[in-house]
Every structure is written in structure tokens, then in C-alpha cells.
Length: 410
Ligand SMILES: C[S@@+](CC[C@H](N)C(=O)[O-])C[C@H]1O[C@@H](n2cnc3c(N)ncnc32)[C@H](O)[C@@H]1O
Image (cartoon, rainbow, N blue to C red):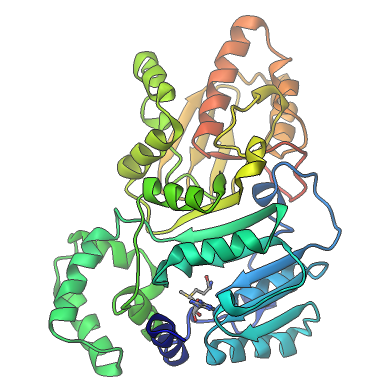
């Protein structure tokens, strides 16, 4: 054990994270709450290059906390799941979930995951909110690379360095005052936050998250003593140094850039000519919504399957509505309310006789080509333009195969 691991173990033994669900059926399934890393529902995001399959895959949840591995195992009972965490108290809760829901496809291990050796490789490694706490996050990526199949995927979430900046400035106060991870400090933090001007960006940032409601959230969010925060450029470099590349983004918070320029052809062209890392960097800066950078990675030898690195052949992809966003469509326009509270309206010619096709396309059932072929060459240009913006900005999900999870557009 090293100092960093000793610290993390004691932190998460005392303050288990996250505040866990007690009943997966009642709190998630019956409320239709989607779990992003569920490979059944979100197969097309994790494996856009593979047709959906019900065959068993092997999943490692590295740093699984109080609930994550149990939820994934319950939602995808056909798969084999291993969850590893340093905190035995966090794993105790997952054991409760195993008993309650009679989960048979999950094995839990209490250890530093980097110490655990397997005689097989994984199809999917999930590690969200974990590697940025390690002294050397690259050591985790190296471990993931070595334990991942050649066509496997890694679902990773790390903190961005932009919107977290103000909270990190506020944290200076708490460290100066020598606040500890204890009840008294947690109480004082709640009191101080209530007195700071509500328009302080650090307060806005924290109010937007549910984390301040729970003691363990305050400790994780404000009193953590081992964290790295990433620019997308630095994260991309770290991944590349470990022979990994970005395959896909879970949401639009970083990747979304051309939405700022779609009504200005000249600027749009200039933006599209930038290399992809410059584009991502500008996306992170303009969106300023990077508390969590959630992405799917793969080995760099698998580059042709990256949705962000290889040019997409628009005709031959499938799209579907993205969970958490609302879409409305009529003869004249498509209106999208994103999970970032932004609203976009694109005027387009849908024509009432084509509505069904648009709906089928937005449900991931038909290739985009099917839609383009309905229109004459002039109309096609307009429809393509809009679909390009939707795809580039992750306003829709994309796959190279039909999408199986139920999706719809009104
Ligand atoms: C912020 S929590 C995230 C939990 C979970 N991934 C989620 O998203 O709900 C971080 C978890 O990672 C665990 N962790 C951190 N470093 C670890 C390591 N090297 N090996 C195993 N677990 C680790 C901690 O004990 C803690 O439970």
C-alpha cells in the first residue's frame, strides 16, 4: 500500500460514495431512470461498431463504490460482472443489493484494482470518478489497456478543469482553515455555502449537483485531498500515452462546438478545418460544462471505429434520440431541448408524408441514407446540413448498426 491508496481507502471507508440506491427496481427501473454504463440500454454508445448482441460479455467495474457494479449486473443479467473497490464498507452495500435482488452474475473484490490479476481480458471496463483520485492516473489506464480485449471499450469519467475552477478556489478557504473530513467541518461548509452570494460560480456549480445534500457528497466534492482536473487536451494526451483513444462521448458537453456557428457558413468551415483536439478544447471552453467528462475509449489500434477520429459517412450511420433530451418535430422544424437546458430549433422540410420515416430514423431503425433518398438534390443539401449538426454536436446518438434500445421522437 502507498500513501495515496491508504488515504483513499480511509476516505471511502468512512464516507462511502455515492449515497446508494436501496432498491434498484423501485428507484431506477420503475422510474425509467437510465444508467449510462448499462451495456444493454446503451450498447450503441459503448459499441457503435458492433451489432447488438445478447451474448455474454465480461465487464470490470474498477472503483465500483456503493452500487455501480450491482446496478449493472442487475440491468444486464446476461453479462458477467466483476466489481473492485478499496472500500469494504462500500462493497457491503453492494452485497446487500446482491441479496435483495438475487444477483448471480456479480463478483466483488476488495483491493486496489491495479493489484488484481486476471487470466482473461474484458470486453468492457467501467471506471467513473476513480482514476482522477490516483497519484498516477496513467497507471490505471495502463492496467485497463493490459486487461482489455483488442476490440474492448472503456467507459471513463474524470473531472474537467473549467467549471470546477471556482469550487476549487473556494476549497482553498476550507484547507486554510484546516477543515477535516468530519461532521463539524461538513456542518460549517453547509453554513458557509448558504452565506455566499448565490451567483458565485462555485455556489452555482455546487447547487447544480445533488452532491451537497449528503455528507459523503460534501466530503467527495469539497474535502477530497487527492484529485486531478483535466483539460480535454491533457486527458487526450494521457490516453494516447497509454495507447488509448477517444471513441465516443456520452453527452454533448465537450464535443458540441459547431452549434455555435451553424448560421455562419464561413466560420463553420473554419471550425471544421481545425484538428479534432483543437475542436474539443474549444468545445470544453465554450460550453464550460465539464464537471464530468464522460467518454468511451478504445485501443489506438481500433481507430477506424472511433466516432470522433474517423470521418463519418453520414449515409451509412444510424442515429437515435439521446436519453435526457426532448425532441419535437413537425412539418417545418425539429426542436431539441438538451439535458444541458439549451434549446435548438432547426427549420427543415419534413413533409407530412415523410414523418414516419423521420420517426423511424430518429429511433435508430433506418440508416440516414433512407431519409436523404426521399428528397430532391436541393432539399437533400438542407436535410444533410441539419443532420450533420445534430451528429457533430452529439444532439443524437450515433451507431454503425440499427439501435435496439427503445427510442422515440414526438
Ligand atoms: C467517487 S467514487 C465513484 C464510485 C463509482 N465508480 C460511481 O461512479 O458511482 C470512487 C470510488 O473508487 C474507489 N477507488 C479509488 N481508487 C481505487 C483503486 N485504486 N482501486 C479500487 N478502488 C478504488 C474508491 O474507494 C471509491 O469507492
